Length: 211
Image (tube, rainbow, N blue to C red; front, top):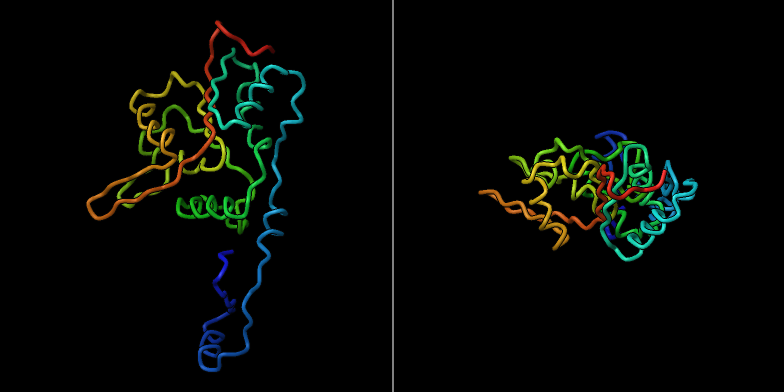
């Protein structure tokens, strides 16, 4: 998928030895990235399936159009999570550069679908309130992307926002402000992208999304 690199497919080491010795017999694999991207752009849910909820849908449309974060408040069953899951479907389609960047992040994190060569839809990540700050931001002995990076170019939804520990809420400040996450270790310092739409859910009786 990376342009400017010739990829030679082989079935065995014998093919490799033959190619190295003779320089022929195997043609570079040609992949049409735009076609692969268009074929992979299928969501399991869709914003158009939502009936009613006009005020809430209008708020989500404004949020997605302007790149704003949004807080949804309503009792259980009012549709907060259902609406949030459909936010990626009204965001602009992936460009090839965005799809490739997102695919690299998911590959580094080890969560890329082995059957898919390219992430073709905008990600939707919904970590539980029991997540650690390292799980949200990223980290580890060998730093890996966290949920904020896995949501890059997509939506990060946190249901039951008040249930998240204070330290987990605090560490999200940098990615919200800068669009990146910097993880420093003694032997290395890594920067992961983290630009996403943030959606939050909270149960309350003071302001309701109509049922």
